[in-house]
Length: 114
Image (tube, rainbow, N blue to C red; front, side, top):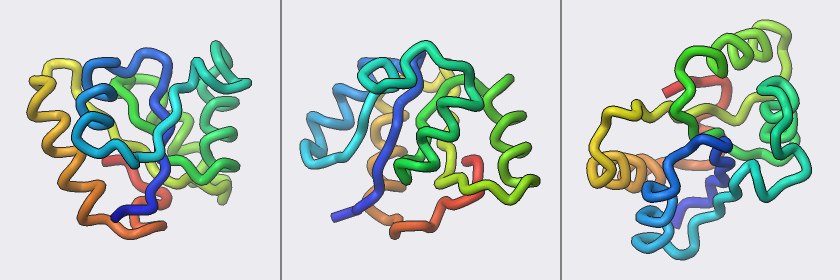
């Protein structure tokens, strides 16, 4: 079982999260809105994710990536980011995420955007 931890950004599709948890109830995933950084700017959210060792799940391919690359260039920790296109069918997103989660090891996605 994967020991990866995740943080879903505030606009991440709740149906994908529910599907992931239905298929893998032991998955360690938090929603940003359930943390003290709810409604914070992206850099604050990314810092919180990094300090918590959580890979970010996002649909925001326009702004989050800019801040992630800035963090990496500055040598700041970044456990990773999984970007899921909003146009991807929900079932396919769930399946692909589950495959990656099960097949991954801790630290594998550090400083990467997938």
